[in-house]
Length: 114
Image (cartoon, rainbow, N blue to C red):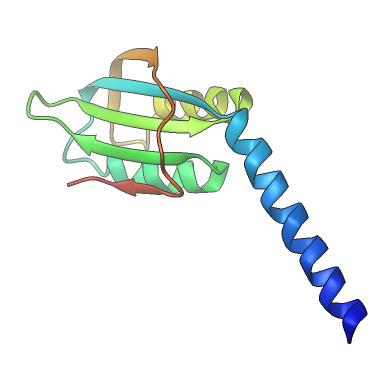
């Protein structure tokens, strides 16, 4: 029984170390999306893609008709995410993206902010 308990602690320790390492190397970006991106299911599309890619943060509609995305992930994850943003969901039409690096955020999942 003592052996099983020790292995469990080691597994937990490795899990938390891996999570900690991922947080250290996480890049944070804000994307401001312009075009036909409201009223076409764009936020739900973005949420599903973010979850699929393992990106954390949120997406929200703005009063000016744009959509803001706060996203955290690896460089590769964010590059793929940007490609999905540009291609849209088939109903949206992305005309312009303003992208900027932002300071570290504290999210554990991706959600739609209302």
